[in-house]
Image 1 (tube, rainbow, N blue to C red):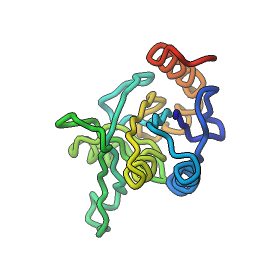
Image 2: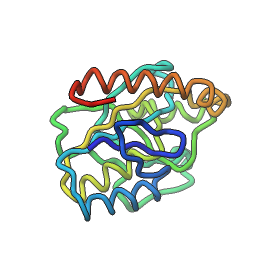
Image 3: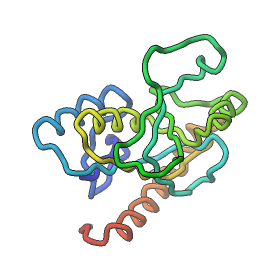
Image 4: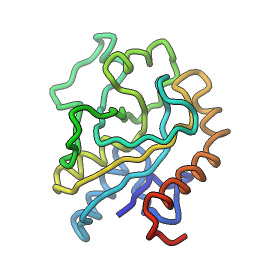
Amino acid sequence: MIICAGHNETFSFATPVGIGLVESTINLTRIALFDKPEFLIFVGSAGSYGKYKIFDIVESMVSSNIELSFFENNSYTPLDNVIEAKNNSASTSLIVNSSNYITTNIKLSQNYLKHNIHLENMEFFSVLSVAKEFEIPVLGIFVVTNYTDCNAHKDFIKNHQKAKELLSDYIYKKYKGLKN
């Protein structure tokens, strides 16, 4: 099953699950309870902390939920804040951070790079969390729309439509059986 966030980030081949950590968790849990998929592919946009360029397409099976305040020693969590897909056989994998907030401070975002975290997507941590709970193999496929700087929202808006088209083309080529 291919899933996406929804609202303005929809694809003809994907089922929307909601924006952010809460909506996506609730709706994906509902799907898993009533019609558990054999495999999940989450597709969506991402912000880059600097390594990946606009319109790069990147795959991942690891996500974190780390807020900027953590790097400044202004918070802590008793929870596991990095989760890896059950089907991940790679010894290392690109980490995608998830938060309900978008990073706009390029200097602070460099802290993520120091911890091998390269992208930011609001839903992926919750997708991996639900997949882990229901023992569903999962993969995330992301297209970079912006950098995590003061222009993040403006660049996201400017690049979003083209990014969705590029991601759609990538998915159709990778999974040739999909119908448009």
